Image 1 (cartoon, rainbow, N blue to C red):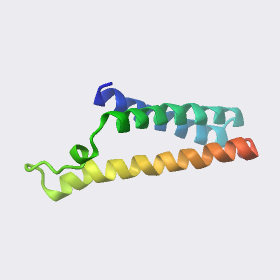
Image 2: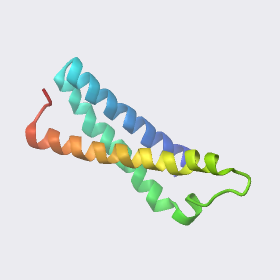
Image 3: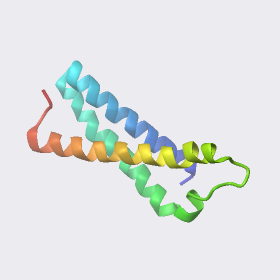
Image 4: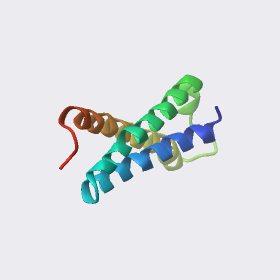
Length: 102
């Protein structure tokens, strides 16, 4: 699977999850069922990322990049993805154990 496909899986999964979360709280609670769908799409993308990727290569700094470019392009994007994945896990557990939110 290509990197662009993996990035799309992760990005669209986060988007579907966030839509399910916010629309489910503010519009109709049944739209919260999009949360597990978005989580599943993101987890598939993360799985293929770890399966295909050499982490040493992913976090290697390109000699032409300055530190700020490296920081934003590599570290921050991976950190935000990890934060979203943790949020997805927690919210899916809440959805499964307590039912619909509000």
